[in-house]
Image (cartoon, rainbow, N blue to C red; front, side, top):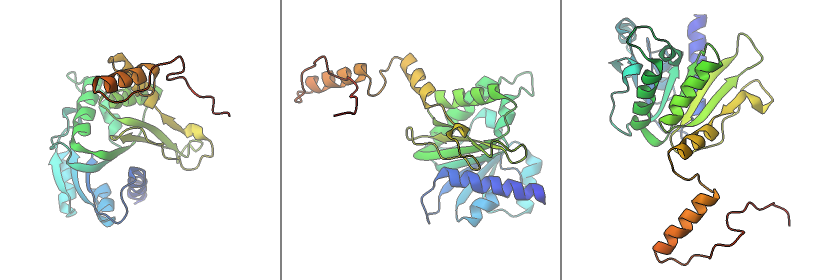
Length: 249
């Protein structure tokens, strides 16, 4: 059906945004796997996968479809129940927005997102990415999701494909575990504005925790002091230490 086709296309795009090593089977997590449509795309591309979903009915459909991945019944908001560093990457199609809602009185979206992202960060390898295609209701939801991801240790941002199209517009949250990398380009848009990075906010959060930011004067002086304590040869501090160069000769 048309819906299945769209789901498969979104999963293919999510895999593309994962930037996996070529011709190498990876161990991937499918979050909110449903009936295993995305899992089938992962299989076709030669990857091994584990799927998590809150709906036992959907997982039963996946079993009937005889998907190859292992299936786990679980609520994203309770965290990911996997060993540290297990996965080479994670994809999620049309599921993340549900964590922004309080469907029960006991549900606190901030706490559920925090639990989810912290546990996801832990079960990914240190070079892995996680890509979520999701449907944010408004900019506040994007802010909520990216803030919690940042606090959990992720770098990254939101890529908006076809930002000028009502029907084709798609939001992808691209998260990285191994430090800030250039954000992927959005499809169907010539301007750079359709990629929203929030690495700056992460640096701000780091500063709030009391650690000097990399390449700031404070960080450089700190590093030089540490080298001196280690007995290593270190240049003396001058008024030019850590000053930004103009780039002109």
